[in-house]
Length: 261
Image 1 (tube, rainbow, N blue to C red):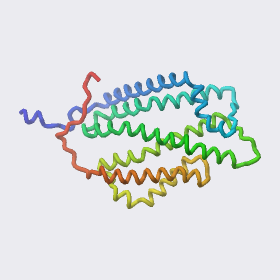
Image 2 (cartoon, rainbow, N blue to C red):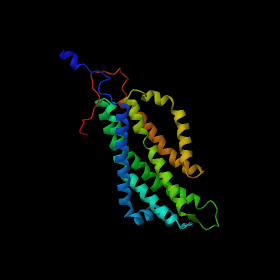
Image 3 (cartoon, helix red, strand yellow):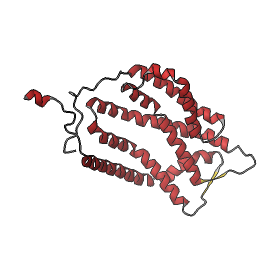
Image 4 (cartoon, rainbow, N blue to C red):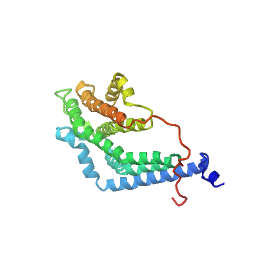
């Protein structure tokens, strides 16, 4: 009887649909609360944040104009929300992981938690590369396409342009982490990735063309080079941490949070 009690039933301890919905509701409340609090904090520094985001254009002699009466409020809220989202990103990622945790095995949960710092670091590196390296080159090109014209840009459109560029470059820098997780799960390997390097280059070129703000080959090359380097770095990681897929051992119980959490 003791032997029967020690046997793990994979269906035991599973959450019902209503429990999943209540758990999702709680996680969304935490995420929204973190976003609101961090955005309110950023509002106290909106002047510094706006000056920082627009510094690249202003340093190149480009005037940013407010074209509508409510644009000033919209710019303040947009910049504050963007900064607040960046501040709340660790909380958002943690809540997503916590929502998935009941359905994960202990080793899967540990692997995901260990990747949390890497997610933040890689995104920060990509965002910094976009803002400090790519953005000045892009603005320098765009401001000289038509010589003889004064460069007066709409401030709200410029902020949309900067936000989109920084966000998608930051996301693209997560490629090594995604490849590493797939290799750890046994879904991809180093040799398999090397065999499709030509197709990978085509995909990288398409991604670079989609997120590059200009149509010139210089900016596209600046985006492609780090992505290519990240791809080959991902191949190296896949060689190191690849593990063939195995049939799950149901003697390993999934992580189930305490009722007090």
